[in-house]
Image (cartoon, rainbow, N blue to C red; front, side, top):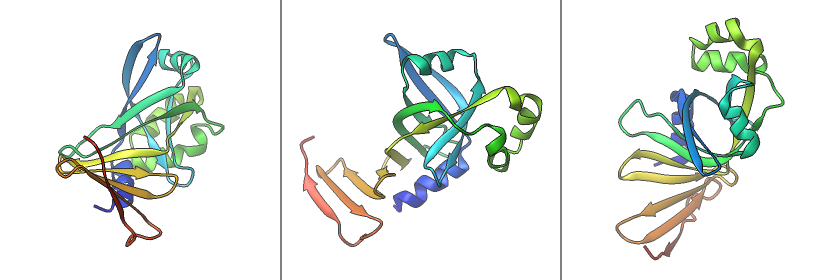
Length: 171
């Protein structure tokens, strides 16, 4: 699997993610539409500024997410941090509308009331099916292949794909 290519394909194709927060030991999850900015490597999503998740972000900015599969089990999941973006929904409206055409109505009706948030994360698990699961490192473009059957973990980079390093690991 070309992990970087599959990561980008899924982030461009899938439109929703389940966003999990936790405050005072109480987890919470909700579905949000998103756009992945390949240049800044952040997930962008919008919400009303006074809702429950915004209050939760202020208490604990650590989040987890998984994209919602629409084909089989294909998804991306990761842990990261969330913060209010310096950009506005109107700044990235065309990106959202290109990915989610129906979002145009939302932006036209309530865009000025929406707050844009960013999720930053360093790596993500890319799952195509139960046999094709790899970790993609956004900071180094490192691909990590985990083999459940042989207890080996292998890594290579996009910069030197022929230089793969493998190590035995305890299960």
